[in-house]
Image 1 (cartoon, protein in one colour):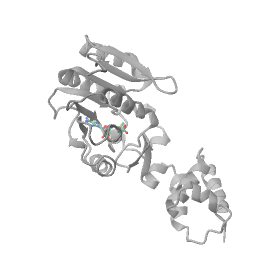
Image 2 (spheres, rainbow, N blue to C red; image 1 turned 135 degrees about the vertical axis):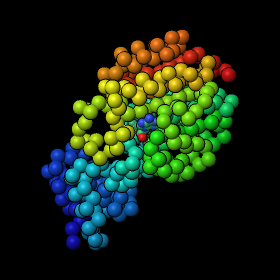
Image 3 (cartoon, rainbow, N blue to C red; image 1 turned 90 degrees about the horizontal axis):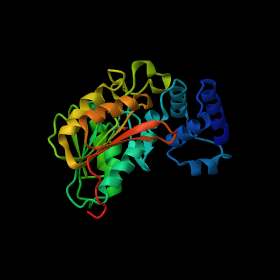
Image 4 (tube, protein in one colour; image 1 turned 60 degrees about the vertical axis):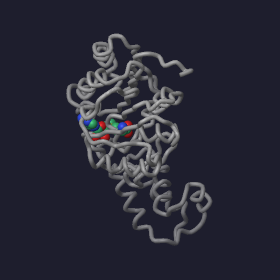
Length: 286
Ligand SMILES: C[S@@+](CC[C@H](N)C(=O)[O-])C[C@H]1O[C@@H](n2cnc3c(N)ncnc32)[C@H](O)[C@@H]1O
């Protein structure tokens, strides 16, 4: 009977041989998932014999070796400190997107009205549900996540019901065409990749959640005038971009928001990643 340590060693070697950089971590996460234990418990058991059948584990290891993301194999991904369900119908939320949540929460936290906030292209609901969970159940804001993918919205509904029950409305629609203003906050992490940016690391994620026409900026080109029509006079808008799009994003945003304060902000790697549009700086006292 192999020990936990020996099983992990074999799985790590299998994954490493397939070029998986995070081989040891992935082997551990998948074993924890299979056994229904956390990593503290796994480390405690390392010298013990593993007496249960491991067919399911080795199947997961093989799928990981073929490139399937750990998040799809376990069905979970942590985002903004919350445990989100993810499936191949949804993008796996990325750490850099957490900044959109912080920015939105900072703008909404002090409001005491029914401020209306929409997350465009919500996917598994990560952004809007994290905003809702952070603001708490008593906050008066009206929070909406929209997506044109019904399968993604089904996942978002499960996350909403687990993490922010009753706080987030979910809508199926194209960008903001389904909605009238005024909106006080719009957040968007829409697909922004160009086809040539495809790489094996994203092969299992839905292409319609990753790629957009017109050098990857086509959806934002369509969204910007929609936001301009609907954004309240004290409203804010933040969207995530590919760093190569920063100049174009600023130029198109300037056309639609000539009077607003526009900013490009860097991600943790220092790359221009977020564009913010503020029609008027909200007074903290309000
Ligand atoms: C990059 S994913 C982001 C998902 C999630 N917001 C996140 O940050 O993890 C983009 C999402 O936009 C959705 N989407 C693509 N085109 C859309 C459109 N025209 N209208 C609404 N949603 C769209 C996709 O279905 C996908 O869920």
